[in-house]
Length: 329
Figure 1 (cartoon, one colour):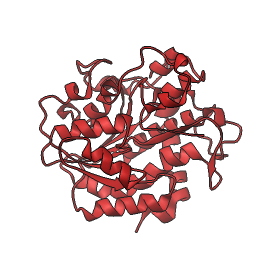
Figure 2 (cartoon, helix red, strand yellow):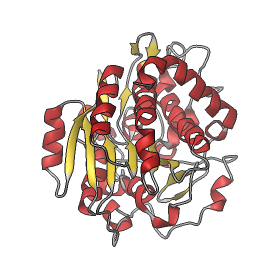
Figure 3 (spheres, rainbow, N blue to C red):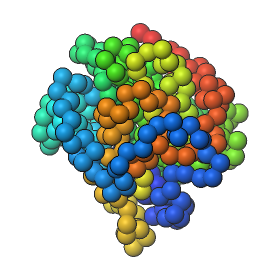
């Protein structure tokens, strides 16, 4: 069964026994990147909310794109950014879900259809946003899925397709709009679970998922982090930035699909889970910060694969080959 979420996949994995609560909550490990030391730490904590980290900000005149706006972290991210005055273009798999989500929040919002399993839908979504002729100040790649068994799309493991390749196409087709903003930001929602990706990192030799499907979600989250890292390199010399965030261990609508007796009692509510995304997307203190990984609204250590620049560059090349016909008009 397809386990869709716009929040933390760690919640479902812990609830089904695939990792411990401690592993799910921790975004860091010994031997991770030391690059985070260059970025000043904020005063926010794991208990800060999205409203708290954006308090006092006026985002009037700014535009945000939030994928997966109809539920969980995406809905809360859209709500808070719109509350602060931004025009939020929210994507969902159907126009009905998008309209319902947009109607549920105060402020200016626009629903757009995005089905990440269908690359033609990704292209259509980007084209619709391009027609709005607006600079994109915040491109927030939040939508994703978690699966409990191996599923494939055209021979590729499905979570890699949805969580990474779909967003890869969308970003490439909207990147000119991000660059057009005064200080455009790409925020990629990753996970501390990138550290549990299969041995060797991205499985370039066989992306089918066979032999590593039990770590496929973690594999897709590593791809998210590496994508953000390489994008930050490609944006050097521009005003635009790219950073990856971990929402932590968040209670989302996935709890409907599991035995509630297995759910950890201290999982975060979405108002806290969306805080890091909103902070990295809006904080004036991060105007020049790029290529970083954040958790709890602060730079965080990360696994060695996610800081591997060569792996990040190769992932970009392979992703380009896999999606080439969808990348340009």
